[in-house]
Image (cartoon, rainbow, N blue to C red; front, side):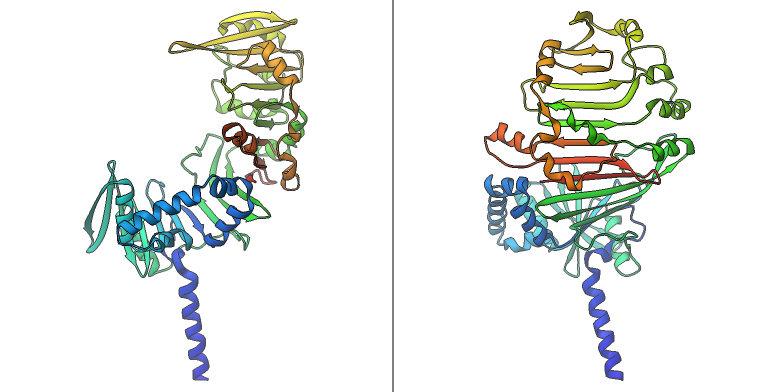
Length: 451
């Protein structure tokens, strides 16, 4: 019996050490955590099966270029390249504190080897600093200091020594644990508590927390995330959860470029009623009068934009669909225009912007059922639209159909294969889809699909 208990205890101890790994260094109060796992297998899947990464790493030779650089730099320092690659081939975690200004990374690596490698590769100065009796290696470049500390075969790197000390304390006490059940085959798992730096709270909604994960499977990188929201106005939440958008329905529009964007916000005037008390000045262009509900009521909430990003002038055409003619507002709108003229019976406003010695033009064409905005003159934009094919037929968009959301408020498609062909004359069947929608509780969901 004693032997059995001893054996079970040993197994539990070993399991706890193996399973803990880099995550054991994440403090319990971390506000941002991104954990990468099974990096070797997922990298091989990206390189071998996902077209755009296969092209970049294999055909374009980025992998061999990086490998050669790492190997040569390591050899010059009498290091093995495996000492450097261990940092990324093994699991690693990135975490941030409450204000997310300080970030730390925990990885399986030798800190001295990493510091020497970085200095040889990009320059900078190596030093050391002692805080609370602990000696940290430092790496200074362009006024920025990174600190490195080794513990039990792991390296903790951060722009703050206090973050490293917090990580060491977490390893000897109860650390962070994810509160979300991620898919077992997730390559990376992310969680944040509160708003991220790029997400600003407003008077009507704030971010509570969120999570995301990425999967490499079936020749595609899929990233899914959710931002849990706290609504200060229940009417806004009701409008969002009761609306039935379908931005993918706009994919029947003609498209010519290599990037298109579809937006569908049903019943925008209802949102106007909710948001108006919180926004004092809603204006269009330089119009001084506050936009009225009647003005917003002219719009259906459907917008489709088509762009040729690699063209000489980054040509684009954006169409906002109307529920009724906007002609009564044209006199007011034309006050801020550089020029007003008629083209094929339609009023056109031209706005001029001077940038140094160059002047760029923006044209707004008013139709009874839509407003077209373009950086091309009316004749050119009309030809641009006429030459297009249904957006859903471009590139490899149709190959994403089984993963697409039909209740999204936003859909973006980038024909990556077209970018590569135009820039490098190389044929790659590649594309990217980005979508956003609300769940039944009004939280924001987003996904990015890459092939």
